[in-house]
Amino acid sequence: MDKLLANLGFGSRKEVKKLLKSGVVKADGHTVTDPKIHVDPMEQEVTVNGEVVEYKEFIYLMMNKPAGYLSATEDATEETVIDLLECEDVVYQPFPVGRLDKDTEGFLLLTNDGQLAHQLTSPKKHIPKTYYAHILGEVTEEDGAIFKQGVVLDDGYKTKPGQLEIVESGSKSIIYLTITEGKFHQVKRMFEAVGKKVTYLKRVSIGPLSLDEDLQVGEYRELTDEEIELLKNAKGIDL
Image 1: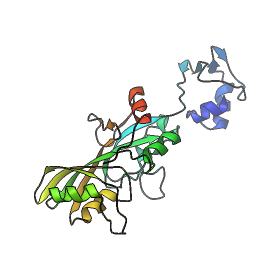
Image 2: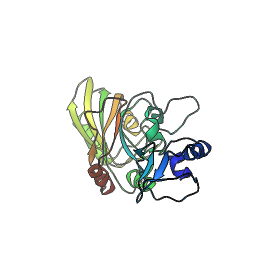
Image 3: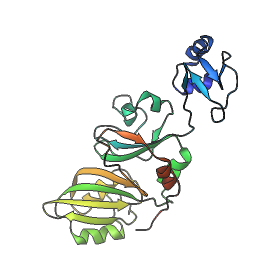
């Protein structure tokens, strides 16, 4: 019991033991004071001060990541996306699935489900991610053809094919780009390879899920059961 309550943010193991001694913790209506008693939160109703403790093994969060935050769980000097979470969500120890650059906005998935994270980030799975971007320079259909074949980056690596959709073309262009891998600064480097520069970048979808338009920058919400199933059943594509 003490481990369960500590993991759910009711304090340290020592603090939880004091809580138990005060008699405010119950399992199926019976007061529990012994910190070592075994409890199954999936089968038993645990309450603290009369309020039911909600237990879940995994947490799945959709965040509209703001610029200026690192896609990491901790950093010695910089703010991370974990700093944007409420305490009741932090206790589940979620981590970013993949990464968005510090100055990139948009859809970031955070979870403590390692199996799903691996499925969504493994290069072998080919899970598509779509980005919306502002580009300095005229993006052309020729660029689209190059991206479709794969782009050679500055380190000699040739990317997997990308699907480019041009929304506006001119000295400042607007595009959507779908890719199936996540190399370091990949979108920016793909455009640099064709002589253009990304000035604004936002991820708008991961696999079958699109960023919730109601989420303001810096906000997040839990995924619905339906959205979780969609992600778990996500299939890779060849562009």
